[in-house]
Structure formats: C-alpha cells, structure tokens
Image (cartoon, rainbow, N blue to C red; front, side, top):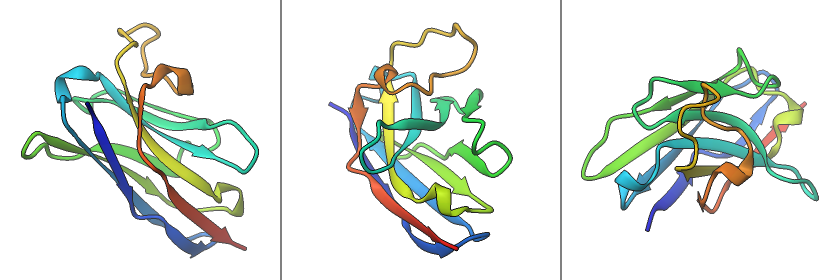
Length: 132
C-alpha cells in the first residue's frame, strides 16, 4: 500500500510563491509516476503537473506552464518526495491540491498523464489560497 502525505499549502497574495511537498512511502515499486491535481469546490479534480518516478519526464497543464515546476527529490528510507514549486500565483490557483501516484501509463503518449483516472493512490490534500 502506498501512503502519500502533502504539506506546504497556505495563504499567499497574488504574485507570490508556495512550495508543496508530497512524501510518498510504501511499495515504491508499485507506481511509475506521480502527479499533482487541484480541485475547485463542486468540480472534478484537474491535473496540474506529473512526473516519472525517476524524475526525467514531466507534464504540465497549460494553465500553469512557466509558473509551476514539479520535481522528484531524493529518495531516502524507501520514501520519495515529489514537490510542486508554484510561482506567480493567481487567485484562480486557489484550490485544494492533491498528490497522487499511478502505474497504468507505459510510456505512450510520451508524458505521464494529467487525467485523474490514471492514478490510483491519493493523499488527503492541502489547501492553497491566493488573494488578489
């Protein structure tokens, strides 16, 4: 079983930055990629960014390209950390952010998925609030 714990959410003014972290532990062999999603009230989760577990391939939603960066940090004690650096934040970025892992993508198309049904393990989420 894979456990995911997010942290780093909070409140910031427009134009500011936040860094979200997701510590992933347990059965690290069971997933090939990780992603960050966000969810607005009453809406489905939407993919923000994704990354392969070796950190070499990434994908971004058009709405965050050039502002957000996903990274896979060092592995330690059978845990990996996947971070989301969020810069030039906008009020529209206000949402609950979730980390997730998946295994179904096998390399085609060439970037890990941004659709939520490509993931089967989820964290509890962390709230990001951006004020104007």
